[in-house]
Structures are given as structure tokens and as C-alpha cells.
Length: 336
Image (tube, rainbow, N blue to C red; front, side, top):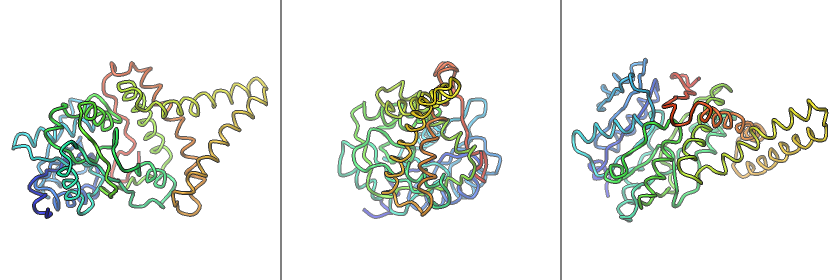
């Protein structure tokens, strides 16, 4: 199948907010592989909507009267496609990513080869994994095993009919809405597969601990909400957050306050063992020299904001509280 043939069968939907130059790169990459490109803007103040129009995208600007969410953005992009006639396939991508050349053709070939498949995804790659420990950690998080999957991130190529059949994304979910969608897709009997191919390239552009912390708060919220909706999904992640993000820190503080040095030593030893285990695991990840210990430390520390994100979700009333966005990047410089 030629790239031109693939283009006639697929439309692409990008979502974004104040992505700056990243958005231009994203839309150029989509136009090269998709017959129709939709951009959904969540209240940008940097001229993103005008830029997208100038590049030939169909633009949807979300009404700020309703809380923004990635799920809502993707759904409204799909609705815009429906209004002009749905294609056979839809590629979703975040506006800070670029689509790797040849991905659409490879993805459609996989879907054509297996009628039971509804969705294919690939690997999201960080453009600058050696920039700092935040980038290196993110690159590792993106690179999950290829093969049949239970869930995946928001970059995905899928059959439009399957998206319609399960009702799209849940717009009330702020974090891990993409994983929740794929779980429902799988429960409806559809197959999902990660191909051993690069799909998108991404630049997290993160240099501050505050932005990294807020990103992990959002991750924890996803653990709590989606894990509660679809047990046992995220069970192991929630357990690790509780142990290393709450129980051990609390045991350390209480032991020190009570003068129980053996208790404090045991808590520190548990953290140390986990750190060493992670450092050993990272040895196979081919990190830039000097980043191994820093990345291992971030993986250990991440459990604290993840637990806080979980706790805040429940303390605020869970799903009854409605949509509460946690932004970790607020502008084109990538800083939250």
C-alpha cells in the first residue's frame, strides 16, 4: 500500500494548548500522512488556532465554559470529522508530538492484516533523552513492550467504527483517559496491539522539579480514578505508591520522632534497596553517562507525588467532584 493510498483512508486529530513551534511541526508531520487533519485547541493564548488554520487544518476551539480535558478534545475532534464524513481510520496524537514518517502506512497494514484488531500504537520517542534526568525518565516510561496490550497512551491509530461503538473517551477523566478508553475497547471484544516501531517523537521540554512533580500528581490521579473504575488495572502502581510514597516516609518520620533508630534505619534501608534495584534495572536502558543514579532517584521519589495525587482525588470526592485539570506545562517553554 502506498503512502498516498493510506492518506485517503485516514484522518488525524491533534489536541493542544499553547504548544508554540511544536504544534507547527506536529501539523506538518500529520499533513504528510493523513488526508484530513483536525486540530482541537484548549484555550491557547499563543495563536495556535490561527497557526493551525494557516497550515490547512480543520480547527475546533473548545468552549471554555466547560472544563478542558484531553478526552473532551479528542471527542470533539472526532465529532468534527463525523460532520464531514468519517474516514475508515483515525490517528490521534498530542500537539507536542510529530508523527514518524511511514507510521500510518505501517499501522494500516497491521489493521488490514487482522480484522479483529481495532487499534494499533507504537513507540513514542523522546527527542532529547540525554538532556537531563527528567527527559531520560520520560523516555523510559514511553518505551513499553511490543505485542498485544491492555492499554496505551493517547497516540494511537484505530478504526473509526470501533471508536464510535464504545462511545469514545470519557470526558470526565483528566488523567489516564487514554488507558481507560483502551480498556473499554478491549472489554468490548476488540484487539489492541503495540507494533515494534517508532510512532511519534516528543520533546517534554522539562527542566524544573515543580513541573515534574505536577506531572506525577496527575499520574497518581489516573492511578486512583481509572484503577478504581477498572480493577485490577494500576493495582501494582497504586500499591507501590502507597508503600514508597506514604507508608515508608511515615514510618521514617514517626520512628525519628519516637527515637526508634532501628525503625528509621529499616525505612531508610527499604528505600536504599529499592534505589539499588532500580539502578541495576536502569543499567540495561542505555542511559547517558552520569544519569543512572539521578533517574533511579526520580523513580523512587515519584511515588510521593503519585500517592498525593491518589489521595487528593479521593479526598476531593473522587469522580463526584467533576473535572479537575492538573497542568504540568503551561506554555511553549514547557514549564509548569
